[in-house]
Image (cartoon, rainbow, N blue to C red; front, top):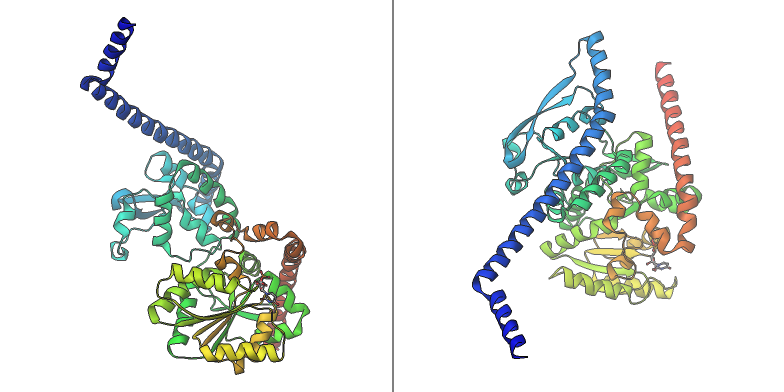
Length: 457
Ligand code: UDP
């Protein structure tokens, strides 16, 4: 027994001796570095293999095509472009000399193979020192990549936060699994991307004109109206709304009387693609609210929440007050009241508060019709019809995760949440909407043709 105790204490001494401890710490450090290096090596191996595969499948055929073109027309195969590499160094990349975005970029896989850029990373930016903005320096420490978050958010029209914010978000979340998902998400994003910088100020679908702005421009428009105390009634349209207006003349009339309409959702983006009238951004109410709240805090504007089930608007008010310190939500009321006396009471409550911004959330088309019918009696500066927004901001219904929105699948999430209510809206409504847009396109082309004929005569 004594011998055992002696042996144990000797072992304990050996294990806790400073030399031993030092050795264990050094071993832990080395294994950590080795693990990091191994992860980096695996990531690099994977990205090089993908780049090599894509170079064979994509770059090589395009190169052969352009080589043939060069033989017949003499046009050069490559076009040099100076971009920012790691640490802000100038990198000269050679793009294929084509106009089409995807053909032009097909050469870039070669530059991944020679380690000048990465497969996934920050967006590739043209070298122009004069264009560098505040904070860009920290972005430039990382390498640009062919597949990047800015591209995906831009293609799906949800790059609301701006380039810098999105790049920072990528850097914070960067991990190998996320990078693989980024490559996969780029595939559907290609379906939504529009290859142009030529945007019209307004887009017309089914006779309804909506504004084609970036989110910050739309928010500027609203805040300018608030500053000058100009009355504005603002609506949003998605494929469900656009389908509905064809069957509901009163709703159509209500939309015609709006001061501004903004496009909501990936379906409108797809319609704009079909119509070849590129959409700048998906300016939906749910994504607009945080910008509006920031402006409200900055400029001391007041908000009234009207709509949703009893208790929801109050919960949203609490959440907004927690999130935006100093925000003034000066009143709220649920959206289940009758016309006549109850409506008069609600309007009196709004007028007593006299808010700058009135958010109305009764769902389409009731909210739009209600605002047009009673708008002249309501004292507020900007009135917006915002649909299910209160349910999201109160926490009553969770919003689709960002990866689903990046895939253009927010509607699938809504369908999954409320299949009974939503199946007709999405499963019947979405294909019907696409068919109607194609028909609208043919109608618009015919109208243009007739117009040109009349001019000639
Ligand atoms: N709602 C309301 N009063 C009504 C009917 C509905 O306040 O008479 C609310 C409902 O509780 C929900 C919102 O209006 O919060 C409609 O949500 P939905 O997702 O249908 O909005 P939409 O897709 O029409 O924009």
